[in-house]
Image (cartoon, rainbow, N blue to C red; front, side, top):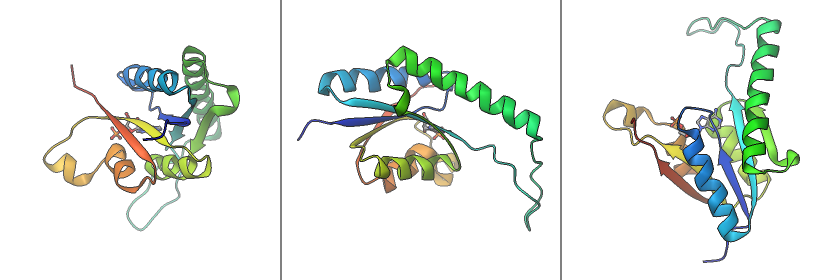
Length: 147
Ligand code: AMP
């Protein structure tokens, strides 16, 4: 196996995200790889659809949301010592955007958290599952437990 050169941490800023982040940092150190972080904002205002209405956020709340997420990304980037140019905040569907940026930036390992869902939740799928299925590079799913 060749060493990883560019590792991507998919950060959702959940309570357990720091655990996933530490794994990504320690792998990047081990392989002397570049580390990047991506966070995807999925609260995109949607118009009325055939299936129902998604209430759009007003401009002010959008700005506040963006600022809050930017602050979290910057804080995590500082903690993990990630270059400013490698801290990415994107709009869209997390699984799609993560896979897309990984291809674009020639990432060779994506690090995500995985809740080990089962039953109906497993059938419905998750961000981690989709990335595992569709990413063209290696994926490390860090198992997260509820406690
Ligand atoms: P989920 O299956 O949706 O609970 O998410 C599992 C993992 O996917 C998280 O631990 C993150 O690594 C990643 N992830 C989920 N949502 C996002 C997001 N909005 N931006 C970046 N990564 C995400």
